[in-house]
Length: 106
Image (tube, rainbow, N blue to C red; front, side, top):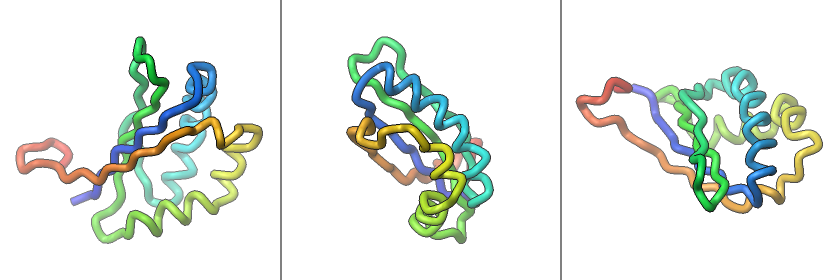
């Protein structure tokens, strides 16, 4: 069974959120090279707080932190983030999720 993680990024502004949506689209192939599968990326239109939500998974035997660190130190990640001011991400919440017995993601 895979390990799932909900990643919630809080951005400084709606404009920054729009820019980060494009960056996340670029992250998906690079993350896959590091055994991180993206299942979906969402925003919450109309929300007062600009947030991007991403559901990713890791193989059961993988160490989540090790996989993340490998990706974050990769040339793919650096290329994706080029020109983006990382200080525009004002919050990141990461929650590991376990599918319930009846979940189709099990």
